[in-house]
Length: 387
Image (cartoon, rainbow, N blue to C red):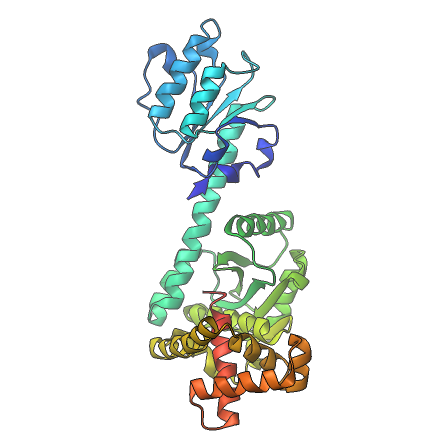
C-alpha cells in the first residue's frame, strides 16, 4: 500500500503546499483523478475511496460556494487527498479548511505543474511499487516452498523473462537499518543508475526483506570466469557505496533451475558477514555456518532457540540483570572476562557471576559446549534481523 506522504518525496511534488489535514498524510492512495466538470453536473460517482483528487476549481470560478459543496461530496466518497492548482483561487474558503481538518483529509495548493504530469508520475510510482512487492513475493516463494528444478525455473521466469540460463547472486544488507520507504527510495536510485549505463552486463535487481538482491545472469560464457568478479564489477558500475552494506556473494555459478539455492547462499553469506563483522563474505568461505544457517528454517531448532532465549530474558526481567548483554559482550571479546568487564564497565566478578548463572540456566555440562551453544543462539538471534 502507498501512503500519501510517500508522494511528497517525488520531485514533482516539491511545489506542493499542505494547507490542511496533515494528520491524514498516512492515508493510502490507489488512484489519481482530475475533477473539473463533475461539480457542474453534481455527479461524483466516479470518485472512490483512496483517490487523490486534482482540480483547478474551474467549475467554481464564478461561484465560490461550489468549492465547499465539492469538498463535502469528495470527502463523503472517502478520497485520500485533494490538490488544488491555484489558477482561479490562490487560497481556499476557511470553511473548506475546517472541513478538511475535521475529516483529516490532506489538502494541497500547487502551481506551475501540469496535472497530467502529476498523474503520470504518480502512476509510474504506483506501478514501480507494485512490481517491487511482486518480485519480493516471488523470491519469498522460491525460498520458502519446496520446489522441483522445473518449478524453480518457472518461478524464476516469473521474476523476469530476461533471466539467462546461468546465474550468480549477491545480497546487500544495510549496516544501518532503514524504514520501508527509505529502502524503496534507495531501490529506485539503484534502478536509475542502471538506466544511465545501458552497457552493463545483464542483471536483475529486487528488494528482499531488509536488503537488495542482485542476480547476474548469462546464456553464453560469462564476462568473468569468477562469479565474484562479475558481481563486484556490477556493484562498482552501479556506484553502490559498499561501506554502507554487508555484502554476501554466492561465488559459484548456478543454472537457473537452482536459483533458489544461489539466492539462499548469498543471503546466508550477507548475514554471516553481519554476524562476524566483516564487510563481505563469500559463500565458499562460510565454513561451519553452512550447517548453522539451515537451523533458521527448522521449526524444532527455532523453538528450542526461543525456549533458551526466553529463560535468559525472563531472568533478566525478574532480577534486573543483564545476562544476555553479558553473553553478547563475552562472545564479542572471545570469552575474555577482563576485556568484557572493561567493555561493560563491570567488575570481573560480576561478569563471572553472570556467566555462571547463564550456564546453570541453560544446563550445559561443559564450557566448550556452553560457548558453542551461546555462539549458535547469538547467530540465530542475528538472523531475526533479516526475517
